[in-house]
Image 1 (cartoon, helix red, strand yellow):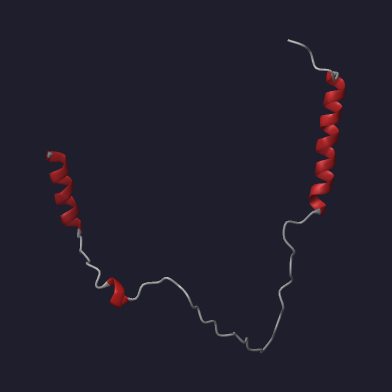
Image 2 (image 1 turned 120 degrees about the horizontal axis):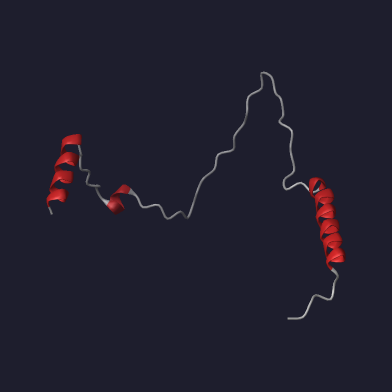
Length: 86
């Protein structure tokens, strides 16, 4: 196996320089811009009405009634007991 063409001391110095440079640059590059909150006193907010069109949400007439089963603690115990027996 051949050795590296770069001496270990130089490789370590280059690595240290790259890490130092990235740590110096990183704090200056924000991921998101921070917008200060607007303080309003006694003002009311106005909201624009939004109408959603083209959604694929089925209506109750399309889906029909949904069957519900009420499960109480005793029913769970009975099912657990039945599963242990099989």
